Image 1: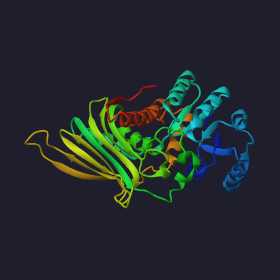
Image 2: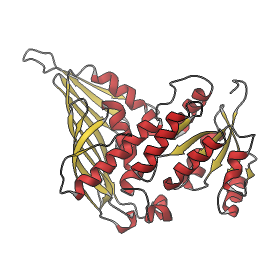
Image 3: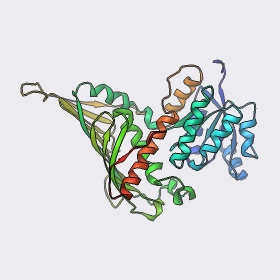
Image 4: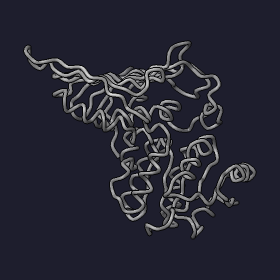
Length: 349
């Protein structure tokens, strides 16, 4: 792809996240030019096109986006059980493609996407998971070098159930085909942050439950994890509770200090780095580090995607193998819970 032109994008799917996140990110990016849209309900695609800043053409058929010679990139925001079909079409018509997280509805589909990606290295196949690109990832990795050997972690993200959550009203979430429902839809964000900082999960023991019928499936998990590095820790996730403060924190514990990263809405994005304690005579220090202008929107991942497409290799990191691992952790949690919390090894592609 030449460096002097914008990447022309066809958006497949016109749901809430396409309107509120992807379209603004694409329209405001110097790298991309959204030019077309498809939805199986044509009036919805037409409404989407009319509300866009760009002049979007509306496709009548799903395949039209992939056949269009003008298109450089397909941006897919469909219920995830359709991701595999979209990837297969992209390869057939030699189009670069990004799909929304989670990578697929189940591990069989996800494994096939990984296989297709490896067999077609000249076609960009990536997964949009913007938590991989948070500033906190690199900040925490840098801080970890100061706390000695990492021993354990506590990852906690809980909140009240939001009855007005517009994302929960979609039929594909209320009647999920994707494993774990809420856990794989929202939980992979949390797992993306955890594993981007500390590495992959090797095995776990978990308990899951469903509090709200509106969630469509299980919506709370408590898990004990062992990472491939040998680090052990807990992962607690769910926003299905009664009245409580929304709280998110990621605590990393080493033999020469600790890190307490608080990403709760009321706290802002900050972490406390404490060092010392490896020996009785060590000086102990404490410093608070604020993360300004965190990349909570999708703009950053599209910026990096634009650079990747222009030859800056390594700009993006959420390839199918990475996204597969996030979903495989959810799969292991479900299997462990169903087996009375027995130890389950996290699957590989």
